[in-house]
Length: 77
Image 1: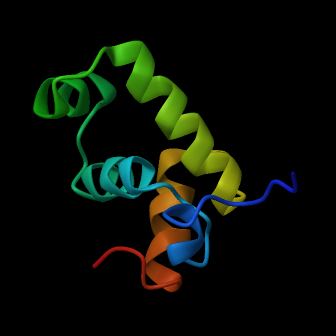
Image 2: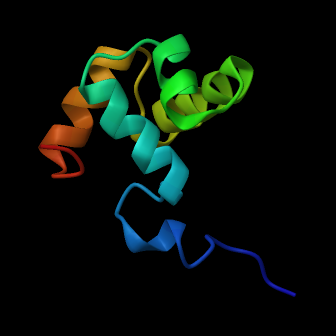
């Protein structure tokens, strides 16, 4: 069976999952991993994984670069 992006992640140009897009929005607000974890009631380690995936998919090495790339692509306000 061929594999590719899940329909949810194919919905945006960066291929982010809905949860990754949500985490990206909170990164854009300047929240730390701990603050995002608290807001989403997830473990901080889970947020670390989501942030790493977001950075990878946006070709960024820092949170700031990821947010800037997301703004250029219209993924966050």
